[in-house]
Length: 279
Image 1 (cartoon, rainbow, N blue to C red):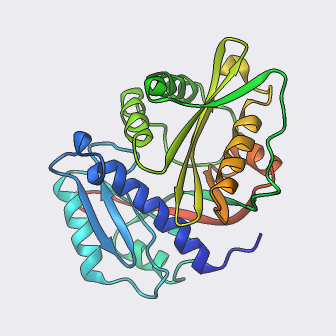
Image 2 (image 1 turned 30 degrees about the horizontal axis):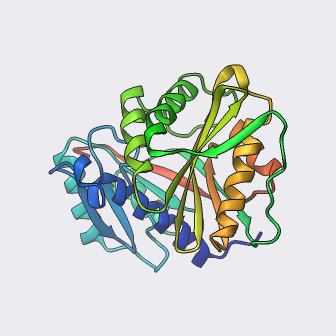
């Protein structure tokens, strides 16, 4: 699957809108007065609270050089909150942006891969499984969903190069539940018999289907749980007439291996560049 810069911009900006929505724009019950949503270079800088995994600057650099004034404003806002500002810069964005950010005091901290799967409504059909049953997560099951994700993240699968550190358990619970109540977000639970064994989520935005998280309990790994969750979400995204499904993974990770096995292809990478407060 070929990915031009215009598609990469749509994908990255969908990620920015997700972060902004979860930070409180569409969920007032979790909003904080110190939250930040600032436009920067066609993208957005989002501060969603102390140590939030949604704190980032993303979607910038697809429309040429980025305004120094906009960068200054975002950097000052994060510094005032004592928070590092992590810019997630696509390899398909303006080529000079990476060096410009380094010159401003950002330091490289890793990479993440963005993979995509083209969608058509009549070609994505989940494979039937006698053992694994995947169902939509109902509102009353959101707590179970969050606890499963906490348990899965606490015992990460081996492999992968670089990437962000795993958030603390209380942050995972908070943000998983916050995201599940947003418009366009759907959760799925996987069971083997009566046992809840896996969970995954999906968000629909601008004909882009974002696969926004997935986890399997350690005792049930290598049994096809993630494959089943991927297939159900691909079918749901195709039925919603999305053009592409996307997922972000740590390079060379088990997650990347799983999604490539289901037909996802590498579209581009993002470099993670961080500016510490006060720099």
